Image 1 (tube, rainbow, N blue to C red):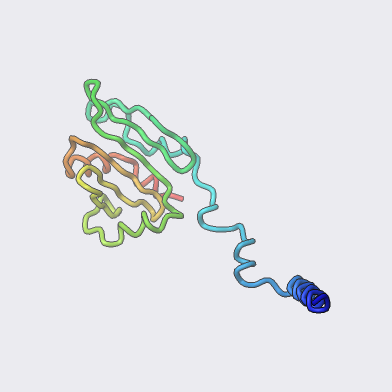
Image 2: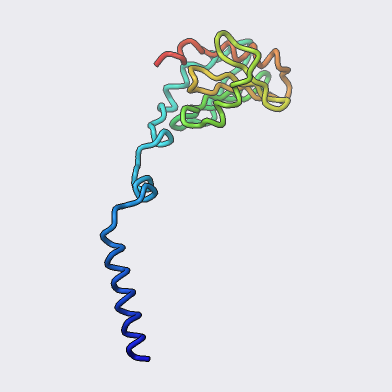
Length: 158
């Protein structure tokens, strides 16, 4: 029995030694790679502010409510009431976001327009930025009109 235990120990040690010298698998190599589309740096949020409709557009005040790399959000208010939430987000690494625009039949300028649910409309600019208007009170035509007030041409420049 002691001989069997000794042989098992030597066998396990031999397997351990041979496993240490093998070439890394493609899975091992993929796990060590750090460059990916998701890791690409996103544009600084403050740089996106310039592409929003101007404060006072259509008699509404614009108040920025959130800003981080790759995303900016603003609230539109009229007479103290929230009218809409506007946002620009960097969707360059999000194929799910970009794929929803593939079948878009409507456009704002040259940019595909989709309606998301009953309260949101969005355009995809330069296959990179999703520009969205969300509102409980505005209909799709009014949301589309607000989208057209963003500087979409400026946003599409590299």
